[in-house]
Length: 496
Image 1 (cartoon, rainbow, N blue to C red):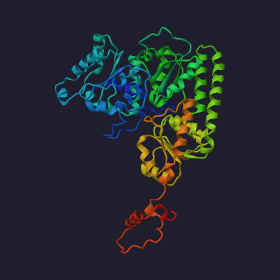
Image 2 (image 1 turned 135 degrees about the vertical axis):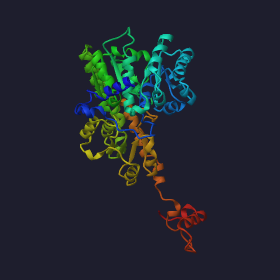
Image 3 (image 1 turned 90 degrees about the horizontal axis):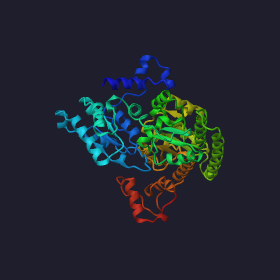
Image 4 (image 1 turned 45 degrees about the vertical axis):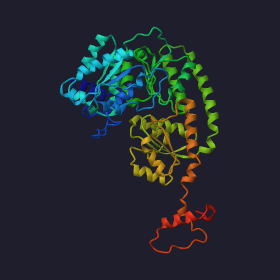
């Protein structure tokens, strides 16, 4: 645990974070994450965060050293996609029981599981995840992984991020540390070139990165490693030979980007593929960094031509939606990079942002939002479900964009809702992704179901012609309505 404590303190002391640099030594030790709520493990613990970052490495076997429930809680909890291997979707766990814990069989069972995976699947590597139970009983997964790697001539990577050590965000960073310590730099590519780049914090949700990668292909830029979206083990192992890095989600892997710059002199910047302007800016930034690292300056001209061509096509497609969506009001209940990049993207076509959540956003994210919206009142740290419902039921927004957890608030308020988080089924990145996002918003807002569900039920309409008043005071309004509805046709009712 001493080595893990040292790693956590190193992660908290992140010099690439401007907010962290402004703290004193005591405050820096506490990190940026809020304390965990006891029992609230789903989507919140360090193990879950580490699994989120590493599981999209698609050809690797991911072995969870824990009782069965840990693997069940974390399996397939993000909508990432693979263009090839499917091993990452196979669930591996040592399935520790009470007897295994009492008899000290954890390490023996882990070694046996590694051997079985090697023989049955022959993966290029196995990632082994520590969890609360195995960390508390003192199983030394690093020693077991080292011995297994020597015995089976196979990379076996320990991921020491038990859930109790901190939040999901801390787990993201500990996963990055595991890659630095055991994976990146362990393979030398024979085809390294001046146009190789890394993309960090891109998860390929619903295949989003596949909308962006063709742009790089047309520029002659090779994505050496996209970590973790649709990644392969050898690509990640040789990521140290890239010439530049784009960081999509700084809250997850800023430590990885900074340390790769320190060790291998790979410059990085933070950008976004959401929206036309941000996508173009990302392509420009990458081309400039490559030129600084020795690439032919002619790539700048090709980038300018590509951006002009793609923007013209995208704006032409979006023109059809502007009359239908201009002035429509959106409530954005998400966080992180989407809290500002999606805001910028929607405002480009005339949509009004009535509020955006900054619960998971960094101080840098919040500053970007202030610059875009020009009004801090549109930012909220967290909004209780009751407040969200009140805002939507008063028709202060025409649609809410959020994750699946809050969809029922919008539906209860009879307001359209669109999934913008990791569970979504449509890709929204790049030029084509922006068009798809706008199309989905248009479909949701103008769905003919909404005028219907907002109509009052028949028993709340005016009294049908010729109906007798209720005979007794005990006859309720609802019973009266049903009686009238049962004996009349729709034409018998007055205006509602």
